[in-house]
Length: 328
Image (cartoon, rainbow, N blue to C red; front, top):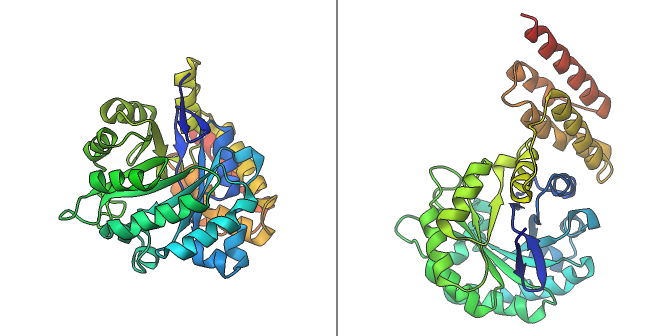
């Protein structure tokens, strides 16, 4: 088994879980880590929110041993706030600090942070230098292909971030304008890999073991990051991990899928107030059922779950539906 080092952090060269706001919370990171994700990254954390002692923002920083190695990902566009945020983050003992310079959503990029930073290489370099100066752990940067089709600058931008002190670069192969549509460009990831000497993490359109292997082979990247393909599907990490370990992989049957749904909800309930955990679990429940017979008819029930008992009843009824269908 190969390992990749980001600074002094050793990471298994299989596949890592992407940072996804509103999805990759602690329960999600723990679950996917247990299923084989070699590294996890937190949801977006506002540097200003930390500096102004916002409790909700600080809650995003807590890390459990079960999700390590884990990075805390911060965003902002002012070097002084980013540096101050690092000092606050230290108490949560992240293994890595990741700077988001790729988020395309308006409330982030529209305020000069996230992907908007790719339009200002000098400011972005200043931010990286400020964060590196304060951090006791490796600092990485997550970027996109560029701002739009006319401003594709990932290669020179990544080189500038390395020069400023970044210990690794994650590249999502889409521009900001593409958001999450269209095809991710593996060529740009390959070009970034050629241009820098630090580890490069490839991200975008990896939805299977074959996609993961293709990303490694075509781009030469050091690690592969998976995001949306993990929705209701932590088994993607188990399959990839099994491949690299030379072990057999068995796809989950119905019982395992539904048992995992309930386990995921129990993880969430152990970490958040019941009403919040159940409300957030609604989308996850729908994802676990995707692709199975009758899933569409159960979607409304998924989005109206109000308790753990509701979820148990949902899984029991769904199993019964599958049994009836198999007898037809």
